[in-house]
Image 1: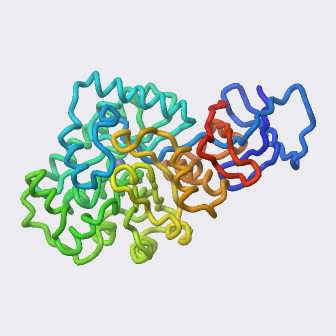
Image 2: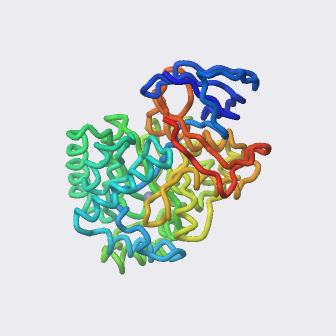
Length: 397
Ligand SMILES: [Zn+2]
C-alpha cells in the first residue's frame, strides 16, 4: 500500500483535489481519495510530488502496425499523396514491423498511456498487443471501395478477428473510411456490429476530397481511387451530401462509434450526427499532431467543444506523428483553444477515451476501486494551471 499526494489531483471527470491524498493498493487499485481541502499536514507515510496527478492517458486512435514507417514521408504532403505513399510503403519484413511496433508500444507506456484504440489491417501487431502492459482494443479495419471486393474483405476481417480473439484481444470489425468502403461492405460490418454490440470506429472527414467524392463524384479522392488504386468507379453514385451524412445511416446508431479526425466537420454535419445517432454513443477522436503533419490544419475545436460533444484524443500512427504522446496532443489543443481548462482537457485525454473503448470499469478516472494508472505532470504553469512546452509526464504507477 502507498499514499501519494501532489499540488493538485485532477480525477479525469473534471473534479480536482488540491493536495489531495490517494491511497493505492500495490497493484495500483485506488483504495481512497482524501480531499484535504488544500491543507496537507506533513506525514512520513505520504509521498508528495511536485506537480499534478492525473489518470493514465487513453490513446483513442493509433495504428501500431505502421510504426516502421516512422519518418518515411515528409510533412505537408496533403491527404491523397500521403495515402498513396502508405499503400506503397506499408509492406515490410515482419521482423522490421515487429521491432518498430514493439518500440512504439514501449514508448506509449513510458508516455503514461494505459489504453489504446488501435487499428489493424492484419494480424502483424497482435502478439505485441497481447504481451503489452497497455490494454488494447483492436479495431480490425475492412477496406474495399468496389462492391465486388466486399465478401473477400469482410472474410479477411473475420479471420483477423478470430485470430485476435484466440489471443485474448478485445476486438471489433470496423470500416476504414467513407472513401474506402462500399455500401455492401458497410452493410456486412453493420450487421455484425448490431449482432455483437461491438465498438465502431471510422476515419471521418479527414480531407475535402472525401466530401467532394460524395457530393459530386469529382475531386482528388475519386482520382486516387481510379489512378492510384486502379478501381473501376463508374458504379459509384454521388449522394449530393457530405460523406458523413451519406454513410452514417449504414452504422447501427446504438453502438459506440468513434469518428476519427473530423478535420472538415461543420455545424450541419454535427446537427446531422446528433439527429441520426443515439445520445451518448458518439465520440469525436481528435489527432491534432497527425492533422498538422499531413495537412498543416487543425479541426474546428471550438465548434466541436461548443456543441458539447464527447471528445477524446488519439496520436494516429508514427507515419504522421513524431511521437506517440497524448500529453503532446493536449499541448496542441490548449494552444488552439486557450480557454479550455486543464480539467476538461484531462477528461478528453482520459475518461472520454476509456468511455468510448468500454474501459471505464478500470481506466479513465481516479475513482475508488479502479486501477487507471497515475501520471505526474511536471513543469506546468501551476498558477494558471496550464501546460507549458516543457511540461513532462512521468508514470507514477
Ligand atoms: Zn488513422
